[in-house]
Length: 304
Image (cartoon, rainbow, N blue to C red; front, side):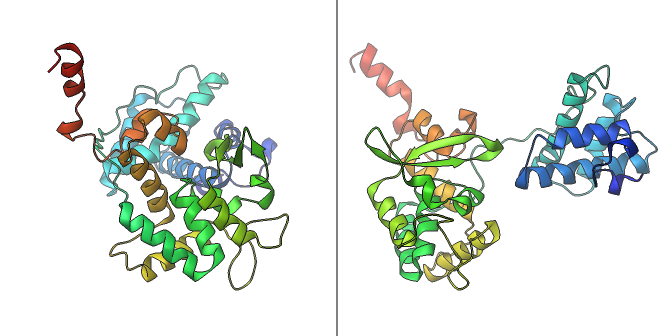
């Protein structure tokens, strides 16, 4: 069976150990992550097939590093090479855990060094975000709800598209809250502030259940692609002079929270980042010498 079909229909008796290990690994994921990792593993399987290698058995670190070099020579940026290796490294890690291979050949493979002082996403500053939210509400109530969920609650496009009316019906410790399932199937609960609730209720109308944000024309639930198109339309009407995506709104929520003085730990909770270093990439002012901790320490210790 060729690499291009290695991850297709689940027929265990017809699968090689490598194919079965790949299917087992991909079963941990769903949605966009599943599709992305399946694509990455297909590319690895194809490269192995072209070079006469089994994708799992007898793979050595040298093979992994040759594949990494191949990805770089194919024109991918260093950051894209690192991303393309996510599924390959996970595939070998779990194959080792499951006892399918004696050791993990990818664990010490050298990846390109990627230095990111800040997120490359083009976000919105405070005034641009305010205008974006205002314009969104003038289009339709659905555009308004989407903009507030992305730009205030920092939801991802797929998360905002999946919000149901029942998901924000509960009040917890005096706060109206939104329950959602985020990246990696991690559940999260976050408060809904009054301005956001007002927009969500306008979008809900007289409905009591079902998907919250609908396509303005057909009335069908939106998906990630619809969210992208809706954000693009809002940005055009708002005269934002650059490309804006749903992630730009999530980026704006996090960066503006940090600009407003929200502590890094609280901004991490808003973003639902597992690693605080990811949130740090959004801090536009961390290089500001006026905010350097040495000033506060000097005043505290030396009284100057």
